[in-house]
Image 1 (cartoon, rainbow, N blue to C red):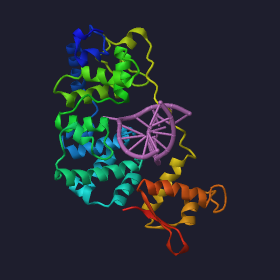
Image 2 (image 1 turned 120 degrees about the vertical axis):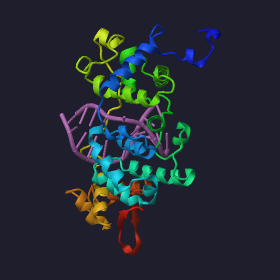
Image 3 (image 1 turned 60 degrees about the vertical axis):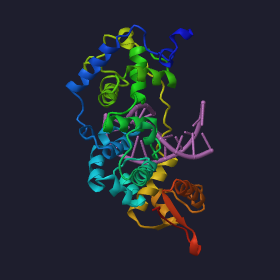
Image 4 (image 1 turned 90 degrees about the vertical axis):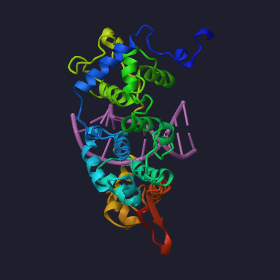
Length: 314
DNA sequence: ATCCCGAGGT
DNA sequence: ACCTCGGGAT
């Protein structure tokens, strides 16, 4: 690599040098516009509604969030309405709709307050500003900027990584994925492009690919389609959920959403059948769970009067 | 068992 | 770089 080609974009090139970018872009956009899953959040450009859908979709299958998204929008129609809600209401909603990861409910509520207080209730349009919102990282910032304002950079999620890794043999490396995604995206078309490339990963270039069935528009360029090697980048494996700490955290939050407040032992007996106050899974164990939940801002623990009372925070 | 349009804290 | 965070669908 010489200095002659100078610019960072050339130095970062991670796509095949002879790739016909215009043809690749046109093929994908045409494929997406011809047919795609009609998710309701794809029919709005309201940044608040987009934001809600993106937070819900983190680590959760899209089919499972459709009704939750519709209920959420009905209950808190605007970012101002959400900011006015109590955190405990939002957390209970989250659990009632089986969305998991209650922290995301807290983040969303916090972010709504930021939008109201820092931006007068009007979402900023720049990814850098959006990323300052609680719970909004690089992916969500660019997704909201793209789908609400057509003003995002290329998103990089597990779909984009898998698709570019297979199709264009992009190395399994964060910087390479970022560069490849950025090179691929046509200027000023982040809305349709980011939707389209994630749709490709979600429908055609799945873990077990459906190239022909889904009519993948990239077959003629695809390295994996040519070689038959559909290896995908490693995704960190999840610890098993059954019996995990997460499972009991979830039960605690669910119960506290149903009962205004509970004392320690009652709560313990209700979240696990083998709860024994002085046993292995007893008060000490439960206090550990509650301590984490309190640090996460999800529950409040009151130790006054010689008894321990627990409730949802906010 | 494995997967899912990530992010924050350490 | 590593860990943690829910739960339904398949």
